[in-house]
Amino acid sequence: MPSEQPPTVMSTDQTPDEQKNIGVCKQYMSIAYSPKENKGASSVQHLCHPDAWFWSPSTFPGCTTPMDYAASHSHVMASVNDLHIVRYDQAWAKNGHVLLRYTAEGNFKGEPYMGIEANGNHARWNAAAIFEVEEGKIRSFTKDWDQKVMQIQLGWAPVKESENPRWNLEALRHPEEMRERKG
Image (tube, rainbow, N blue to C red; front, top):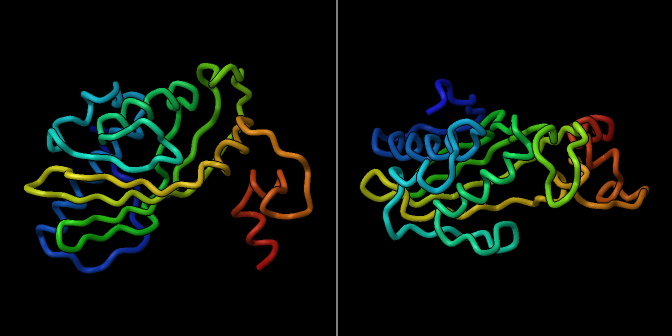
């Protein structure tokens, strides 16, 4: 497991069991998001129930287990070979459920992706991982992520220039900066 966890920005008081559940989920995420540690499904299998399930049909179609997700994610990391979680924006647990909302980033400096050659583009995005933990292992994992921002920032999705910030290339490449200009 990578040595240091990203910081958590917002949380709340948690019981010792809730802390353990958050720890299991952060351990899973640290492996799944590590270009060095994630070697596919077997990398995270020890953290999951054998019949654990995964749900994110619009972003990871065909993935039905947390192990499938790790395997699919390892292919993305071959292209974005410095991909990592910057911070956990929110992290809390209750009654066996864990929410990790996080910010991740990386650069397209690795292998070609879907026929697109590496261009060095940087991307930063947010996503949420919602887990169910039973007896210290992941029972389910639901991922909520709008991949459009990352794909556009990395040059994986075509965008026509627009004044609309939802489709403006500069706004999508630098969402934090654009928010600061408007606010």
